[in-house]
Image 1 (cartoon, rainbow, N blue to C red):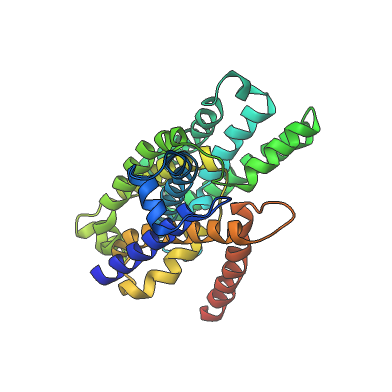
Image 2 (image 1 turned 90 degrees about the vertical axis):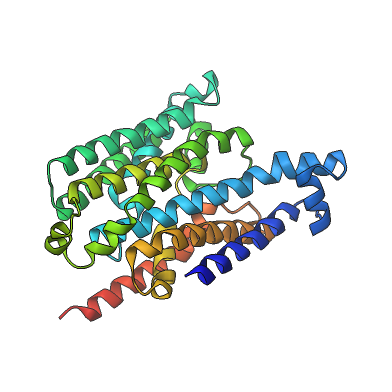
Length: 327
């Protein structure tokens, strides 16, 4: 297990240095480290610290949030197709941001959009958490999440349909496509506390997730409190994913793909999959962002588009595989 963690961390470190050196003013490893630690020229420090470093840090936070949340939800729901978007948290956060753009509230301050996005995620979380306290089943939880996601998607489409001008439509669409470009350290500072708390809550659920593989009755007999476990995972996922969505827009499929790629390497133990999924998610997001920056396209590709192009075929393959395993 330690070897897997070390390998993923090493890959993430290499990709991070490559990302810090890539751009209109390419830099070597030495120049990147000089700019990062303040020993290089002032222009290198500005480029690395203020322009490229926030992009890398957001990729870490976003990937970790999506990867660990996906692994936790798949373990909780015992559904290989579960991912953070399943519970409607991402869609609800997206709706909050869309409302800020639709009504032009961003003119009143840079914090309005992320604040409303996180308020949307919080509202969805409170509703789902109320369901978990009532001792609801996993099926009811999934259905409630699907309903929330559909409602948020419908209201987002309504906002696009009634947008007062083409500029508003463009702003909404670009935000919904998802990106970590042109972000600042202030955005990182906004996201970091919520992601950190969310990941801690998810890691606290790791032992119970492993016991849950024995079955709900057996896990309960061993001291696992299912309502508390659901609450930990839902709240942790909402905090981490909702905070990231409030800054980066909607990025899909990372939480679906990464746990599946790594599950066999941890002997299919849900609790042991959480940390590798966080590291793997960061690797996937940062790698996808590097691909975007290396490709020469007429218009810059958006991160959400690339992850969807990778994740959608993967999702279909999982559906086909699941059907083949059914009796």
